[in-house]
Every structure is written in structure tokens, then in C-alpha cells.
Length: 265
Image 1 (tube, rainbow, N blue to C red):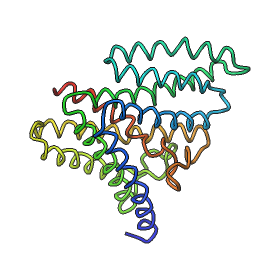
Image 2: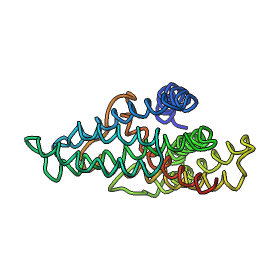
Image 3: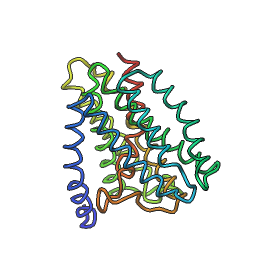
């Protein structure tokens, strides 16, 4: 490991440890505390996304109302209620955009993107936490996502040669993707060894789902940042960017994990 990689890895760990402790507290607490945490986190991510595309004049109030509706629906209801909250956000956003000085289709598009991408992901986290063994499954997903990301980073730095998506994220490599995939699957499967209510096959299925969706979530956010001409979405994690930068993969894996676990129950 070269000096630059070592320094960057140490910086990542310094950021990751307190963030992981907070995430663990919220997941274990569950209930209203977890839902409130998702609401605060979602508001931060909405702010970051709206800053990136402020030229489109999105409705910040519309995005926040949509987020609140989705989180409340997930905490008090079920998937049908979440869908209803999502559809109800369309007319709300339209009216709020209409009364703004500027907005139009770009404003509606960015606002609804925020509600769908961020709001629905966090709502699914709340839904997942409420499922049987949802607390442990959510932790498994987070462990697989973040360890897979670290594996992809270290693997890419060590043996990466073939660019994965140079137009979107020039530093990502196919070799790093492979390393991250293996680490994510092994991490989730290993966590399943300590959960006697989950079979090894189920843990493997969940691990593969996480390993596939995590890099897609990462690339999705990278695509948006490149389109917006932004390097980092914020500074909440210091040199390692904003909440969107750190949780982009999670917003894909937690949704996938919910439906995978729901199917396996």
C-alpha cells in the first residue's frame, strides 16, 4: 500500500467510525428515533442535491414535504401508504413550483428526483427496519455496502487497470469492481453465520444483491455530479464530501435489500 493510499484510508476510517456508531445507534433504537434520523439525514441530502441543481429552481419546500410524507407513511403504514405518499407529492410539488417566480419542468424534475431517489430510499429503510429481523438485515446491508466500497477502493488502487466508466467516474476500474463485489458478498454471508434464523443461502442471495446494486448507486450519483459539474455534494464528512457522496450506494442497496428480504421471509 503506497503512502497516498494509506493516508486516504486513514482519513476514511476517521470519518467512518463516528458515522458507523451513529448509524448503529439509530438502527438499534428503531421506531420513531430511527424514522426521525432518516428524516434529518434526508433533509441534508435534499439540501445537497438542490444546491447541485439550483439553476433548475427546484422547490425546497416541496421536496421536504414529500420526504416527510414518505417517512411518516413508512413508519405508520406499509408499502401501499408509501406509494400513496409518493403520488400525492406530485400535485404538491406542481402547486409549489407554480407559485415560484421560476421553476417549470426543470424545477419539477429535480424536486421529484429528490423525492424519488432520496425519499423513497429512506422510506424503504424504515420499512425494512420494521420487518422481522429487519434490524439485523439492515446492519448486514450497511456492512456489505461499506466494506464492498472499501474493497473496491483498495482493489482498484492495487490492481486496477481497466476503466469501468471513464465518462462518469474515471477513477473506478473493472478490477476494483470485482474486488468490491467479492468483499460485499463475503461480508454479508459472514454476518449471516452469526444469525441462526437466516440460512447461508439466504445470506448469499442478499450479499449478491447488495454487491450488484452498490456500485450502481455509486455510479448513479457520480453521473449526476458530472452532469452538474460538481466534485463533492457537500462537506459534512470533511474531505470525503457530503451525505450523498457517502450514502449513494446505500440508497440503492437498502431498497433492493428490502425486497430481497421480503421475498425470503
